[in-house]
Image 1 (cartoon, rainbow, N blue to C red):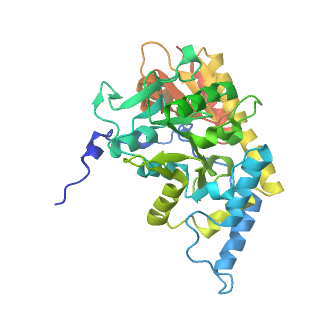
Image 2: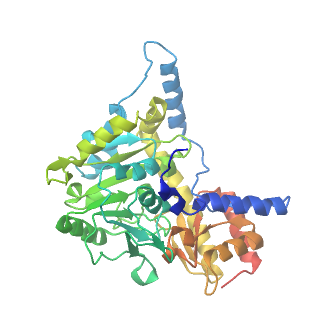
Length: 411
């Protein structure tokens, strides 16, 4: 037998959302006939837009004809999509991100993990606490996390987020090389202002750090003083990579398509001090390990940037934010502290004194018949919280919150 990557056994036995699904399945097995409403995992429920479906059908027809057939596409993405992204997501907003800075992929989750291929294993990594588990788990697999002690990986720097700092992390006291930031945030649902984000860009410029900015939920931002792209901050194109997804904004969770921006101004250095373009390294990595997102998916994604598609994005994100508002109001009415949900589909709920997140998960599941995500799965600062999503249907959201209010459950 071959020797395997020993770091896998350092990971939790089960990925957070797999464990949630396992417990929900066990409850349903022991309570036949009970309808469980899923308010935990961030999977969308609204169907693909008509414009996207039409474009994807046309793309399939292209593949059925010898004259228009497409085999391997560019590893960086087709120009029709990269041009549309550059124009609508950046240039129309006064941001100088060009098609050559954009790399289309099969989704943000893949890129967030794969980016570790282009920076050194010796880099000191900082993550928000709580945060999306992929940032930590990928660091564990890549050997950057060290050992876990009392729930904390001693090789990582944690940026604690709680009500005392309005879920906005403080700058590290020490120098870190790579910083994972996510806004609007998963799981807390909070968005960041330009003044707050500018502090991070300044830190990265001063320390020579790289920011990996996860903006998968940028289309949910409604308040004008909150940031949608890190490149709204002057100088960010010299210190930051931005990762985006079509999953939550256009129902692509099952289609798989997103993109990562690696500006050509962004530089790193080899061990001998020689300067190198991160755009060039990422391009080389993708050409080596990736054959590009499918032609059909990319044609569908391009349709999002038509007038009809852009209107549909606004409509569907309004719908999910409306669900989040219902969730936030219901938990507030019964005495819980509820955060987020205004510029995000996520609501972050304080689960009460003396009970851990999994206890609250079980209590809500049994008393109300809907599932949540235990906050402890997002880090030590998530203990005592649960996360809910606005991605279910309006009908199911209203039923679940009605059950909550009628249940009598409280702090």
